Figure 1 (cartoon, one colour):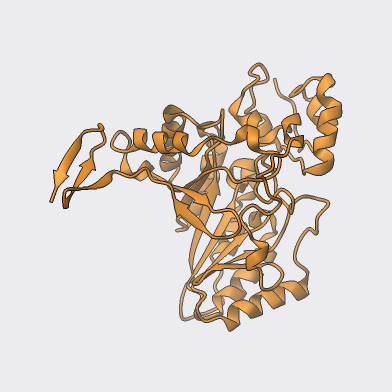
Figure 2: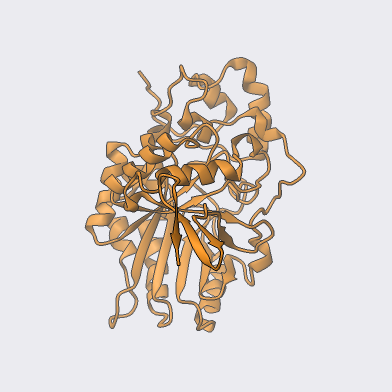
Length: 352
């Protein structure tokens, strides 16, 4: 029986809990010296210690393979810095910005594309002066329709701090939508309190209510425990729509069956699948990346065999900061002045 009741933060913690052998400790200490480690009780409890390829462990337990960096991997794989006009803001697309309030997470994923920027040894949060400058930037740019709170995990902030930021954003007339990207419902479901939910619905403008969305990052069906589903329900019952974000990961969800189970579990939890991300070229993550053909084949298997509610968009963040592009698969071909379109069984039909 697992008695772990605290977040594991060191190689020694991981060894002591039996997730790796003592012989692996020295290598894991090198990993932990470079990349942040945090494995909270809710996720640690899901790991099958008897399975060397457990899909939960693959995501969260440090691995010596993280010390191996391939030539194509980048410290900033999606090019955040190239689109950061002021500290804490990423303005890549015309009508929306990222607002990175914190660099801290409840759990550190071993494939994180911001792994060089997050963790306890990095600045924990934007300073008050930086927050003011970021909000001033949003106020000054009328084209910004949506603000996406990310980081780090924005839901690690206190309800008081979240309420203050939501109030500021709600007072900006051209900001209509706020989206928050988080792992908190699966990592520490008890943090999704009624007070936090109320903070998310705070508006600084009596004439209107911000449209607030929460995007939940989940990669395997087992992460959606009864406690995680209850945390999601507290937000959904308060009228906050939930979106699902997942990363295609080798050994975790890189089969049609695992992806089907994940997407169905999301929909059952009132999380609408939104993006399935192809793995980014973050340092030390090659052992968890698949090829694009694997993702396309999985999407083909889902189409027509699983409810349309369970269909995410399979996307790649183009390295260098050029944004997301859909990866298909493609079902349409131009033939003799008309089209051929493929159905979900693989048969092709003329359409003119």
